[in-house]
Length: 255
Image 1 (tube, rainbow, N blue to C red):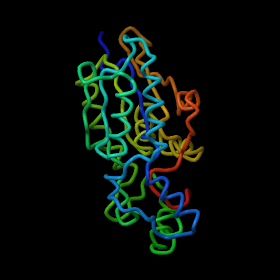
Image 2 (cartoon, rainbow, N blue to C red; image 1 turned 90 degrees about the vertical axis):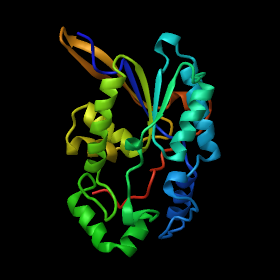
Image 3 (cartoon, rainbow, N blue to C red; image 1 turned 90 degrees about the horizontal axis):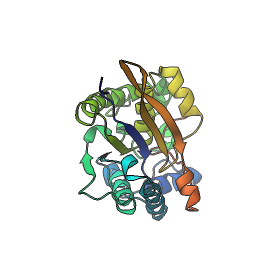
């Protein structure tokens, strides 16, 4: 029986962004608001993020043709699109061999009223929301105008249905954001709330790290995606490129 799953699925968080750098500066300075001129969707890569994306592309370039990506699915946010473009260019993944698809279901988690606020800013400007989030937990908490992790997971269920329908048996790269990587893991590994939040507490998903799955047949009629790599950063270390793991957006303290 033919599998509905991709042959290989790579989940990649975008390279370090200018927003990550601005967030670090704001947190270090004890500021309430991140000083950044762009809309979140328009935030570009930092210079380091460009180097990280290129280093990851160099790693993909070393894969044998029979194992190289055939499809790149990408968030519409600029930092993800720039990562995908640089990865494809340095990885030798030209348009004649690789399909690039932008999909809004891979966009960053929407933070609504908490957008651009640091941890201190959330506590200062919206103490009642900070308290509510601590009580409810980040998995279910939805800020006004924003999304919970469950909301993100709902749109990713739709995305995975499309992937199994259109890209079965192919080698697929997903370039997106930290919450997307974690929520995809939640779905693919059949986790519950506690399991994915335990993983989240262990640390941030490094920029341009790779988490991957390979289709394996466990029974004659049962093909599953088997976890292969988790937050794989060897391509960056091999290129002597600094590893960063700043969160994509500020968040209130974890419960």
